[in-house]
Image (cartoon, rainbow, N blue to C red):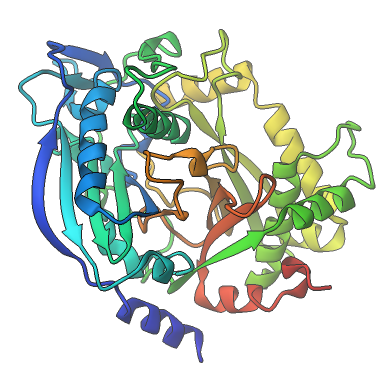
Length: 445
């Protein structure tokens, strides 16, 4: 089957979902008015789409599961109240997140797709097939000026529940997302309060007030790059077992890097993926390719911020080279570049990046990650399979269809074991077809 036919077939198989209820959840106690300025780490994501997560749970009683989730949500929002708020701009044009007791709070949708079982969905490759299970597809973060900052959808399945989440990426990153999710699960399991409250003073990380008078509608912004129709994309999940990850890592570490520091699991898998995607794209030797990592800066900034810091505290780290250099050198060459870029991204580099951005603020679009890029979001460090609301661990955790482009990768802890990693990747259809046949990448050689 041709690549374009595969894409068409996947798009035709969208799971039919019927939404039949909507409500709003507020913190269970009055908190008054609270507000917090968005900072330089937050603002570049205003023109990204809402960050979507989808978790599948087995369970016999949908109504009981939903009741438990709603009750726990009201309690956890006492600490994570910013998720029940809205975006506003103050008189100087500075964005802030605001909560008060008169707002609507978190939007909760109830839906059904009870002709489908959990097992029917756990191995589905294409997120567009499940797009109706996750709210706020193609909703941009700056729309949080008039829309909820968190929208949840509970979809009834034949033997369980799909939990679709849409988080406004302008107010939190992946670390904060999973801190919220595990805290919510904690409350649902009977805790009176969360064990690790969020650290909400984001101006401790950066105080600069940045006025934004830029076109917040991407259609009104200058065209970015070459005009033309977007490429036809396909999505796949590749699952790497613990033994495969160890093999990738040990092979790469047979030759020490320049700094004699061993390559980490992340750096090793990154090298494996970057080289394979470059081969699949059949880039010319002179073509530039970029490997982009959205790195957690909580321990990199000065002073360091706690792990519980709530907000965005990430920055993109770019590794750039010519495809010919990747072809001509052993894998250690790519790994050493990635390692150096990550290790040298210290407080000084972070501050310089922020200073430059504040002097010329640019609202990025989600696909501005570099030419011929491989861009990694999420992290296998997130304990996504520990999010147990009292009816068992999730059967599968996925990203939604937002913020996907040619070369976007999401890494998750694998369900099969402690060291396994699931990799979701979106690629141009022809390149994906080649990647699926790459025995070196699939570790069949």
